[in-house]
Length: 319
Ligand code: SF4
Image 1 (spheres, helix red, strand yellow):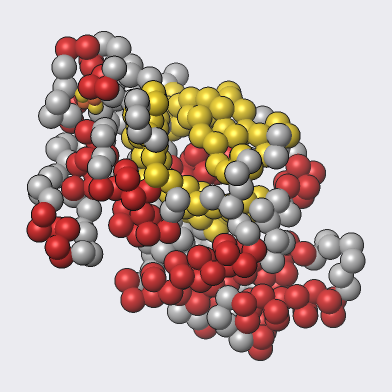
Image 2 (spheres, helix red, strand yellow):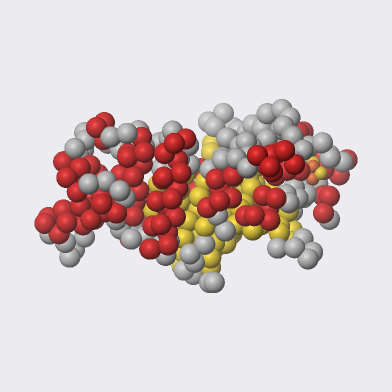
């Protein structure tokens, strides 16, 4: 499959205003093939959401490039860039409570992206909105209601309709289920899976529930303190992690399969993720790694392809 998206050494630092920089995303390279789902995992504070937003131009890039179908996207978007790219790339936000304007009807919210559509009059827009509300499991007459009249799961369906009505090719799903009750999480994931198949979507699926990410993704990428530490096929990486951080991240994640849960060693991640303002020298995971060696505190391990395995790992154990 051809790459739809090519991210090369993408960097996003934030100026803290006191002479310090927050290294939220630091030289990340990742390609995503057409119709592929890549799951991006890591603890809170690892920079996952900032990465997704920077890829879509919602944050300007400090350095690095993002190519979409071979076209290099601007470092900093102007309003015309957002308008031009809205039909190609979209985002589904984490919090269905705060991402929907409470003063707008559901119809107005979902129609936002197609309001300027040159071939659609107001009847055509209404018809398209009704079609999309049904596609995401709501009803056409819900368009005259307001967001507060809906449950969390229904609001996320409204957010999905708003993002997909423009028929984008690439969608960043930023923790789309983490604010929802466990009982509705699987419904929303299944809906995304069905829409991905019917629309041929390519997804970057950001989440912290690793078993859910494994279930939906073709490949998984593990992020720690602004950098990628491991990339591989979802099942292979989940059942045979190579990087010590991936190992403890998966080991500390509740596993729904009781048999696998019993068979694996129980692990917990020691300590806290360091501040992205004071990034340690060498391997960023060294302060929490049980396998740390002298070299780890001095030399940053690059993300390298492992021999005989479809896996990239950034760790001195594999050099
Ligand atoms: Fe641990 Fe060293 Fe590997 Fe970092 S490079 S994960 S500190 S073994």
